[in-house]
Image 1 (cartoon, rainbow, N blue to C red):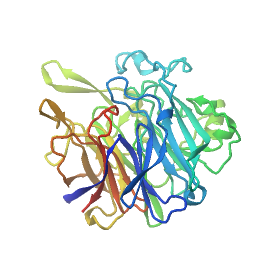
Image 2: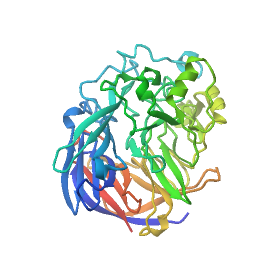
Image 3: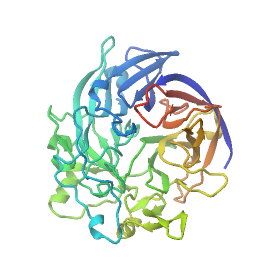
Length: 475
C-alpha cells in the first residue's frame, strides 16, 4: 500500500481527555463549529479559533479513576439530531453520578477451557452486583439559553467499569435514527456472553427511533430488552451483535449506498475493523416475542462481529507462558464450541492489526480508538479510505527520565467489499511530541467527512487533568 505522510495542526490544547470530536452548525449560527466532548463531562465548541463551553455536566458524571486513574466510564457519546439547527435537539451517553456498585464478579475473570463452569457463568443478583449505570438522554438548546435535558431514552446497568463504548452515539445518514454503539459490559472475555445473547442490551449496535414518543418519564435501569417498558421497546432495533468494545460507527456514501465501518477492540491479540452495506435490523419487540415462545430467532441479515468466540480474524485465545521459554506464549482457544458455532454466522473483518506483528512495515497495537471514513481531497492519497487510530504502540514505550513515553498510531485501509482480509498501512506523522506521551484517544470528522480530527492525551489516566490536544490532520 502507498505510504502516506501527514501533519498535525493543533487546534485547542489543555483539555481534559477527549472522547468525541465532530462538527455541527449551532442554532442561530451560520458556520460550522467543532464540538469536543471530554470524558469528565465537558462539551466545548470551537468557532473561528475561539473556544467556548457548550455544556458542562461534570457534576452529573460519577467519580472517575478512583483505582489507578484509568477509567472507561464518563461522558462517552454525543450526537446531534438531523434537524438540530432548527429544533436544538442533541443526545448524550454518560455514566451517572451516585450509581457506583461493587461489580458483578469479586475478582478478574479468565476462562478455563478445562473447566466448563468458567465457560457458562451467569450474571446473578443484578440489582446489587453491578458496577454503575449509564444513561442515554435527549437534550435541547435554544438560541441564548443553556441546554436542558428533555427526556431519558435508556438507563443501562453495567456489570463492570469497562467496555461501555466510546464515541458511542451517531446519527445514521441512511435511516435518520440515533445509533448507539454499545460494548459488552466489560471485565475480560465477556464472562456472561452478553454480546451473543439476543435478549441482552450489552454487546449490540442499536438504532433508536428518536421520532417516537415513549410517553414515559420513568425509564427503569435495566440490562435486558424485556425489562424495558413496551413503549421504549418499540423504539429500538438491533443491527449488530458480537461487539466487545467499540469506538463508534462511520458511514461512507458510495454510489447511493452507505458502507458502514465499525471497529471491535481486541482482547489480547487482534484489533479489527468491519464493513457492511446491507443489514436487516431486528425490532426488539420481535426479539422478545420469539424469546417468550421459545422459537428460533431468524437472524438472517443481522451483522455478527463474532465476539466472544472470535477475536477479529482469530478464535479468541487465552495466553499462557511457555514452560520452557518465558519469553514466548502459547495461545489456547478459549471458547472452542462457540468459535465453531459462530464461524458461519460472523462477518469477516475488513482488516485487522495485531498486538504482536513481526512484519517490518506494521506495528504492535494495544486498543483501537477510532474508525473514520475520509472523503476529502486535500489528503489525496487517503480519499475514499478508512482511517483508524490505536491508543499507543504495544511495547514501544521507552524510559525518559524514569517516565514511560507512549505514542499512538494513525493508519488506513481501503474500502473493499470482496470479503477478503484487507491490508493496512501506517500513516507517517510529521509532528514532534518530544518527550511527552501521546495517547490517541479518539478520531473524528466534520459533517461531510472532508476533514479529520485527532484527540491526543498526555496520559492514559483521566485523573491527570488538562493534558489533551485536538489536532486537525492536514497534508
